[in-house]
Structure formats: structure tokens, C-alpha cells
Image 1 (cartoon, rainbow, N blue to C red):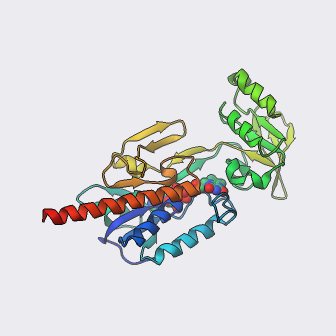
Image 2 (cartoon, helix red, strand yellow; image 1 turned 120 degrees about the vertical axis):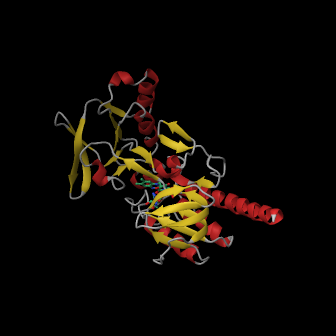
Image 3 (cartoon, rainbow, N blue to C red; image 1 turned 180 degrees about the vertical axis):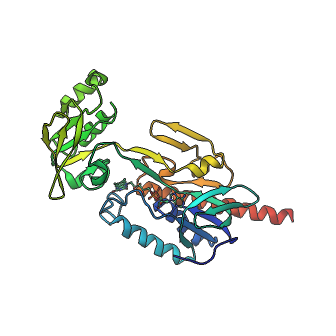
Length: 315
Ligand SMILES: Cc1cc2nc3c(=O)[nH]c(=O)nc-3n(C[C@H](O)[C@H](O)[C@H](O)COP(=O)(O)OP(=O)(O)OC[C@H]3O[C@@H](n4cnc5c(N)ncnc54)[C@H](O)[C@@H]3O)c2cc1C
């Protein structure tokens, strides 16, 4: 990690965010001999988890180790990385990238790989245990907790889908309706839940029961306790796309957050600005984020090559 004075430095590409998406883009850009800077605030989404699953050949690796290896790899190709936060990106002949600690740098192209934040349901204990025994994604954690007694906390009627999905990993699933009224579930929902053997419990959840630093149950507002060792929740995804919005990128509002409209390589509607990873969609897993960063980088390499050749021709 570099600590030099970056003010007024000019890079071919500044990558905002040093998670899987940003580091993957940086690796490809460095290997293509582009002067590249990664600015990373150092708060990757999966930090609460001890292990990262489902990334071929890295299954089970701690997320911090995965990123440390990525940082080592980009350094081999001369890519610079600073621990800082980009507070603004302004368009001009070059982009001007403002850094939180003051000053800024210039760049010909930008990759926004800023990820998303998970906003937890406001049930006491849920946020504290997220990534341990409060989980959101069966593909990330289902195997590790298979056959345990699961609870699923509904945030909306769409929680039915999560309850049905996780029932692949355990036959003992209780679906807590919490603030969702039973009448909001369709007849098909109820029949599918019954077919999957999922118990449906109406009523508000008041909190989690934790003993010896382990989740042991779900406490209802009426005081009843259901013994459960794992609870699945549906955090509200909050994409970190403020920079793109300020740049005037076309955005698409979805039930899962507002994301930039991008082409298959992550090019946004702002010429010269690409996006990758959870900054373009909440379902992007680590392997997708790395792939998205790679695709954005190859597109940028082509874009810069043609721009330089055309400039030479013009000259
Ligand atoms: C608890 C949990 C467990 C998960 N487990 C798995 C799993 O097992 N397998 C799997 O494939 N996926 C898993 N995921 C999903 C995984 O976290 C994401 O797929 C992955 O983090 C997306 O990578 P990314 O690079 O887009 O974003 P991130 O990894 O979130 O990286 C974004 C980076 O950008 C930085 N940043 C944000 N804004 C700025 C700014 N303005 N300036 C500078 N830096 C900035 C952030 O601090 C962060 O370091 C899990 C998610 C959670 C919540």
C-alpha cells in the first residue's frame, strides 16, 4: 500500500474500490501496462464472514486472505493502491478524483467497484450476529449449516422465496412472518411452504436468544421462544453508487436498490466510466465481481488503445 503524495498525479485508470471487482480490474490493467491506482476504503461487504465459499479453487478461504493475495498480485505489475475514500469524481478532459484525506488525482478512465452495504432488519441481535449464525445467502453459507434448525425472518412477503430456497439445506425450517400478515401470502405460497415442510409462525419477532456466544433461539413478542441455531434474514441492499449518480450516470431503480445501466462490459452511460461487482447488482457473488472487473478492464484497454491511435492519426 502506497502512502506517497498523490496530488495531481495522472493515471490511465483509477479504480474506486479494492474488493474482488476492483482488484480484478486492476490486475488486468496492470498486466496491460496501464498506470493504475486503486483507492480502497477497506470495508468489503463479506468482512463479517470467516470464510468465503463457492469461488472455484478458493472455496473456504478467509475473505481477508483472498483480498491480501489480490493486493500482492496487482503490486507485481506496478499497480498502486491507497487506503482512502473517493469523495467525488468530476468530468473534464481527464476525470478529477477527489480523496477524503485531501487532494486528488487525475485519470483518463474510471472503474467504480464500490460494492454495496447491507442494511439489517431492526430486530435486536441480528446485526451483531450477521455473517456468523445470522445469514442471508444459502449459496454462501448453506452447506456449512446444513441440517441445522433454521429460522427465516420475513422482511416482506418475498421472504417466502428465501424460506423455500433454504429448505434445500435443512428439513427443519421455521418461517417467522414477523410484521408480514398471513393474508399477504398467496395460496400458492402457502401450498409451496407446506410441500417443503416449512412451519409458518405468525407474530412479531422481538429478538434473538444467544447463549455462550451462540444463537439458540428466536424470541417472539409474546415471550414464546423457538429453538433455532441459524436465522436467515433479508438485508436491504444499499448500493454505494453515489459517485455514479453525481456523474449523471443513467440509473435503474429496482426492488433491490438503484443500480447504473451498464453494457455487458460494465460501461455506464457516462463515457469513460465503467462499473463492476455489487455496484451493478446485488446478486454479484465474489466470482461474478472478479469476472466483471476483468471484463471492464479489457474493455478499457481496448478503449484507451483506440483513443491513443486515433490521437496519433489526428496528429
Ligand atoms: C456476510 C456475507 C457473506 C458473503 N459470503 C460470500 C461467499 O461465501 N461467497 C461469495 O461468492 N460471496 C459472498 N458474499 C458476497 C460478497 O461479499 C460480494 O460478492 C463481494 O464482496 C462483491 O465484491 P465487490 O468488489 O463488488 O464489493 P466489495 O467486496 O464490497 O468491495 C468494495 C470495496 O470498495 C470500497 N469502497 C466503497 N466506496 C468507496 C469509495 N467511495 N472510495 C474508495 N473505496 C470505496 C469498500 O470499502 C470495499 O473495500 C457475502 C456477502 C456477505 C454480506
